[in-house]
Image (cartoon, rainbow, N blue to C red; front, side):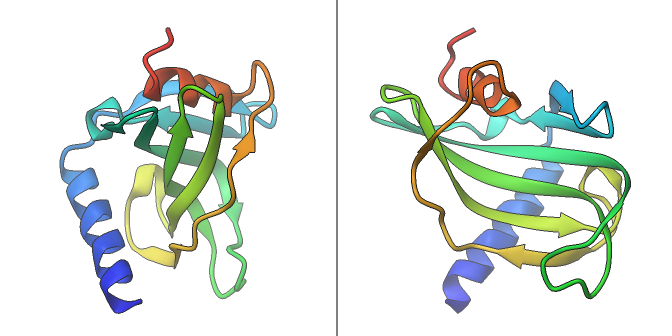
Length: 132
């Protein structure tokens, strides 16, 4: 578990240094803007991993509700052949665009699931799987 946490933190730190965020879209009436970082794409067969950043206009509370966050970075895996995705890890940040300090992290992978047509997740899948 410690090794996974260290790997997550290292990935987040290296991701911040090399970040080339590309706006993918917005949701919730523009209160959340989503970005992809194509420079983080890692392909293995039909599966691709890529970081995304979700930036909010107003503070939100993480699951433990100990503080607030204005953005989070998320590592997802995308199945390019079967058109599905799963969240691998994420970190909530107190500042916009992944700035200031991480206030909550999680690295428990979700199950594979389909995405809705014309959703932001589909747009992220398109970037990750080079379907544009």
